[in-house]
Length: 132
Image (cartoon, rainbow, N blue to C red):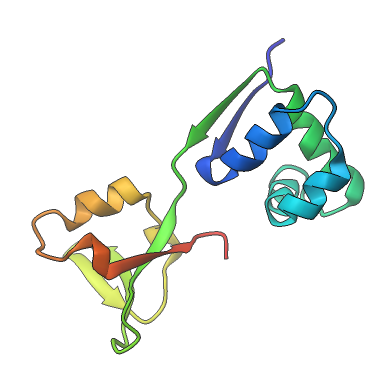
């Protein structure tokens, strides 16, 4: 039986580090990737117990195949001078709002495609992690 994992590309560095060693030392990964390991532990095991965190490392290390998908983010204007900074979508199209809406998280490529033809430069926006 093959073990295949699908992870956000934000975990690529963690995965490369774990897969790159023959016998992973969990304390090294806890020290260097604690946030990523905690996120995966919550997603996979719905807790933050130490033994579950070790299982995350073991699962990544023993996977036969790991596929990375583009992470989703919220997008907002970089300028603090604008009160309504977050992007949200409705049937009328692109709008700006005070808060982010869960339904409006999108990948960088989706966001760039959305901006096409609007005259708004991609560089005027910043991404905000959808996990925060």
